[in-house]
Amino acid sequence: MQQGAADFGSLGLSQAVLRSLAEMGFDEPTPVQARVIPCLLEGRDVVAQALTGTGKTAAFGIPLVERIDPHRATPQAVVLVPTRELALQDAEQIGHIGHHRGLRLLPIYGGQPIYHQLRALERGVHVVVATPGRLLDHLRRGSMDLSNVSLLILDEADQMLDMGFQEDMEQILDQVPQERVTALFSATMPKAILDIVGRFMRTPEMVRLSKPQALTVPEIDQLFYQVPFPRKMDVLCRVLDARQANRSIVFCATKRMVDEVVERLQSRAYAAEALHGDISQPQREKVLRGFREGHTEVLVATDVAARGLDVPEVSLVVNFDIPPDPEYYVHRIGRTGRGGRRGEAITFVNPREMRELRVIERVTGARIRPAEVPSAAEVEARDLQVLEEQLLHVLDKDGWARYRAVIEDLMDEHDPIDLAAAALTLAATGRRRRSASPEVRTAPEGAPAPDSNVRRSAPGPDASRPDRPRPKGRADGRRGRESAGRAGASGRRPGPRARTRSG
Image (cartoon, rainbow, N blue to C red; front, side):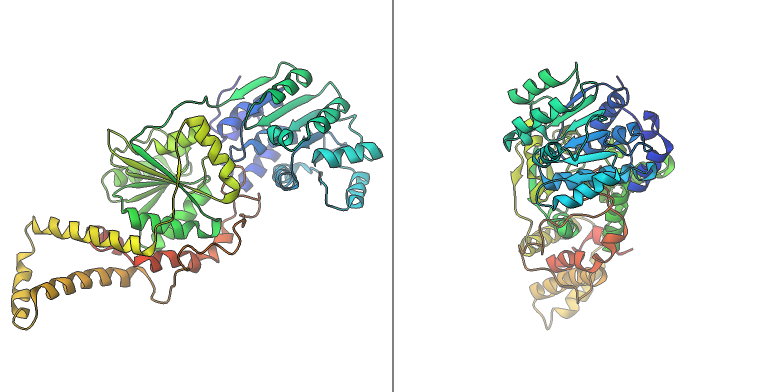
């Protein structure tokens, strides 16, 4: 079996699907995609221990689209899901993948007038994404014919069991043709899931990407912040200001998101550079050289681009997007805490991603502590601490003696301590003036976003995940608001790195 793929082209996909993936911003297959897609294309059953955020929707959506005959307007594939929200999410994702193949897809769930679904079925569809109860309603009505279904997907099967759908699932499995391909996706593998696998699947390929074990090192302090998407840039800037690490790595899910984050950081005078698959080898070497030498403070990267990256001085890793797999989490945070040094890893999650975070904890054996976003007061205190450290450093060096005459002239009328404080204020204020507009205001400390469930739109419902990238234009209107947390925290910090940013 193919264990990995450098790009989607190596998986033997059609040009229509490759075109859709490129338009969606897909970069390269995630581990679950690289292992599941070849199996389903070859017609083998698959059981994958995977959760939302691993790219599992595309893992079954891509072969599903490839296997459909668009000239036969009858259900050929069924995706069974536990909730209305997941039905809509999977339907949108698969719809984008199948756009250039003329795919006709229908989400079926309770709470929606059934006559809309009946009319769509009468017109003909290729794929049905359904909750168990509503699908059984159609089967009892005789409004749906499953006799031509050749692919059945059970998505988040453990959650369907938890919600009491086991009997419904088994009834549906009994009514789908036996000569079919079945794929089951589940974050956990309880006995009830294994019973279904044994009864309804044919020698499935088992895909487990990680084994529960302590995979992270104790030198890394692991935290998470609950951050709705609209506040991510604000919080990232707060974190960078509060930690003031010499070298930080920020991980994003897609190349597009890397470019957007770098653009916004650079616009606020951070020394940030991008690293992803579209970066040429000479440019990659230049970026890494600048990062190792300390000219670049923040490296923003995709997972694949950062493979093999070894910079011992990295003291902070930020998961701007939740990692797509527990193994990716281990790989990401392993960029810090190297060579016996202490490191810190911070993961941004929205409330709907907490389940994924808990699975990462369980699989990796990590303890990821909840924490509060740094306050403006904490950032200011850190500014003063760094300023003191830099002042002592300058005192140990030559080059400041020429300023003594200025101080000595002023000492006749002013207290020396006041003069020193005024000099520091001048340095700090000058930096703030260069980096932040005075009219920019921060949101009230700790205030939630207007909608904590705001999700990035098309082509998928959550672009922070690798199988749901987000178009570039959406963020542009938020540029001013995103900078609020940056300016309101404490302006910019003074010192040698301030000079780097002012250029």
